[in-house]
Amino acid sequence: MNANLSALLYLVAGVLFILSLRGLSSPASSRQGNLFGMIGMAIAVATTLANHPPADGLAWLLVIVGIAIGAAIGAVIARRVPMTSMPELVAAFHSLVGMAAVLVAAGAFYAPEAFDIGTPGNIHTQSLVEMSLGVAIGALTFTGSVIAFLKLSARMSGAPIILPARHLINISLAVALVACIVGLVVTGSPVFFWLNVILALLLGVLMIIPIGGADMPVVISMLNSYSGWAAAGIGFTLGNSALIITGALVGSSGAILSYIMCHAMNRSFISVILGGFGGETAAAGGATGEQKPAKLGSADDAAFIMKNASKVIIVPGYGMAVAQAQHALREMADMLKKEGVEVKYAIHPVAGRMPGHMNVLLAEANVPYDEVFELEDINSEFAQADIAFVIGANDVTNPAAEEDKTSPIYGMPVLQVWKAGTVMFIKRSLASGYAGIDNPLFYRDNTMMLLGDAKKVTENIVKAM
Amino acid sequence: MEHVAQVVDPFIFRLSIFVLAVFVGYFVVWSVTPALHTPLMSVTNAISSVIVVGALLAGGVANVSSGSGWARGFGFIALIFACINIFGGFLVTQRMLAMYKKKAK
Image (cartoon, rainbow over all chains, first blue to last red; front, top):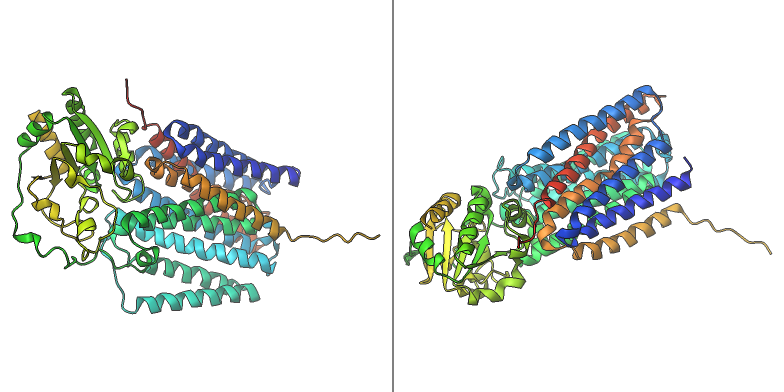
């Protein structure tokens, strides 16, 4: 195939990828967008195979077997994964992109002639620079995502792991990494190539272990961004516009999501990266609330009050996901709607462990997406609501964020559930939330605590109705 | 009059594409509705696996030296990883998007 034609086809693939993201501006156009993405991918793969067909029968076999294995594993995972596990799945996928970038770069390093970037041991300097950046970011994304995966799937504690002198260690590692990149570019030696890989792998681990579970939405977005930059780096090496465009799209997408998450927590990106948040229980703000008694309610009380309400706003959080309570919740909402109660859902940007996590879970439980609202669209409505039904959320409803200047979360935008007539809290205990901050809302007069597993309590309310 | 052709390094063209794509990404992603941020992450995962083109080049290289043998091995593993991501990413996105429904009248 003509090189110009294939370059044009890669451009078409890149444009289709842009359209696939563009489709996500509304649920109605999103399915078509996903289809555009698939077509773009098919074009990119077909163009590569037509332009650079595998050299011999064995190579064809490797390619076909490789695609078949990957496709089978990917399809099975996509079908089986429960929606509550999306954060860990996305983290695992990020790690694969990172590792693929490292392996492709290694392939290009050992067989540069296949990539038109020189001959073995004599690779163009510029390509070495691009390659080493792609490798470093890819390796860092790989181990960083593996740690994020372990933390998100609770195979590893979400508590931050703080090494002594960790900033010093990280800075020296980063300096050593830069030195290795320079070494690789100057000498072209495989020793520097692999040192580069090893240092970046190590840096990825050390960067993510000090970051606490509450900051995972930022981490996962950030790794999304890194996987994009790694792909773009490899795109420069290959001179492939589809890869460069995609890398840039994904890189900026992850960066924007990180920004949105940081903003929603009123934290700076730097303070998240430096880590350590959410480890110990914050002393400030929590001291006064302990003595006051909380008002406990039963499922029957809750059912009675809600049936007689005219407007209920449901605030779901990570606790709902853990208890898999979304289906019971939707059943409850259906019954309320039958009684003529207006039901809406309010979602905080950092509810759950990744951006948009709650929306997917509600969609899975057949909650129509036009009943689900974002923080800024619904916050003014709590004052008119009879009941705010908080299920598995805590920190995102904490009035201390607006009232208590000493609170660590002061300034974070929160859902103003306390303005509703009655606040119902489904929680396992009166313990503080993930960020380790006590919630004064538990002890207010218009708050009713429904202690227990989110799913069981919701089911009991449904029965009581 | 002699016209001296000034050849622009292809790197500059690539950089131009990259910079413009960053801007396109910036505007496109801000227009994504927050309700679809999880599908956004899974689909960006799938499309960033277009790195598969590199895996195909490395895996299909002519077997002429020990270096190309290594390249084939790396390419093969990269191909598996990228394909897990491509199929897993697009299919799980499709599964999620199919769940978003409007209110029944």
